[in-house]
Length: 284
Length: 302
Image 1 (tube, rainbow over the protein chains, first blue to last red):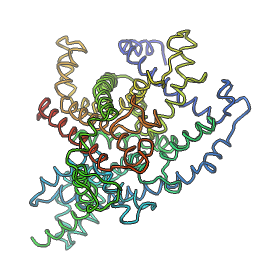
Image 2: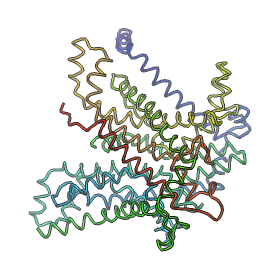
Image 3: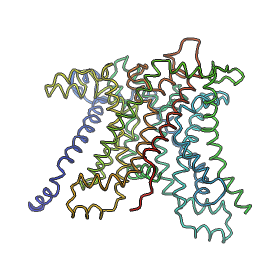
Image 4: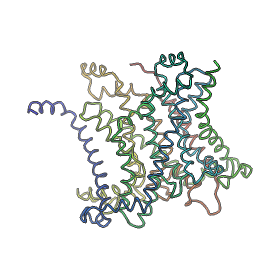
């Protein structure tokens, strides 16, 4: 890069200096926090307290300890099962409803849209007690189905709302020609409209995946047994016990285990994830 | 058309059933339950004992519950101002032509993609830790500011402030994204013509940006309110056992109904928990109406 070039860049960016300083502070803060915890998770508790991280080399056993002795492998498996099953289930229920609401006229359509909108702002504490009672009566407490059912049903209104907008923008001609060709409505939906709505379905699917993966309150209430716990709830229990035992290195390893999966997913898919958030909030 | 009708019914039924199961039935039952004394969470209605408004009266009489309402009001009001202020600031910064915009946007949004339990642990066990390795302690220690280095960030005096700062730090990115999407839809020509007429960045912001993103601001306030009213994880992470400094209504309900630390042995009134839910829902309704009155939704054309 030539000097004049550099000068012109500097000149253009000079008024933005305060902005860059703020952004750099934010970056530095994030790097220090994440970086230090990452380093601490590979050290020993003694080194953490004496400020001599890495002095005795890299201690992978903190991770081994968390995954095996602290059941994090199990929590990870649980979180994955809950999240992936529920994410698919939500789409299977929401997509047909969104299709009908977005493309067809029928009495009560407006009422239906408003009902779904209102249900999105009902606090979860308003529903959690009867749901717990229902799950006890259905003998589902203690089974993984409980959280899967709850995660599906709780996210249907948002997903229907998100996909309705998506379906309503698809061209009408394709559907018409399919019907003229002798497709049933079901075939037209399944074979033609659903594949066309794929970008919207993927966006909302990733968004739901992150929401469910990080959900905490219902997981705490409904999966209060080691075999059922999610990563987030497992981490909370582990933190309490490790604080008493004084195993800080293990504690930070556990934090990194919970941190890494969504962090990597975010790095890979940040554009899609960001589209999901703005798409859901801005249209409203 | 008959064919159409069955198709519509087939498509809508699963979504409607899921709404009945997760929303309608539980909301009505919680509302009803709040007027009864209910000893066991799975008790059938024949075992409930009608006690009128006693659950509500007891709650209002409980100092801890009143404190939980004060706390969420403080979170909503103070935290809301802090979060929306910084979110707006960063959104303006990112639309002002800085380099690597997509990177900065992803970075500031990052805390929202990670489990709040992990983020809160990073704060309580590292940033706020009063051990020698604590980030703030060692930072202020190195700078020689003893007064700040000696602060017990998670002690009773500062715990609420510490919790609020940590929570806002994560929320900024979320609201920044929403505001940013709103700002990017404003035509560039508006800014260019005003610049030719000599308007400063500040004037441009107050005269062009703010009026044109008012609906987006409204969305932010609604979303922030939902977050503040449902405040729970952070309170539990900062105080594993409920204390007046950080208690919130959801945390209160969790302890009354599902936890163990506040229950008198052998006595549990699930109805009280139901009343907490009802109060929170009523507050949400009141707040939404207030927002609708204060900032009515306007159709903007630009």
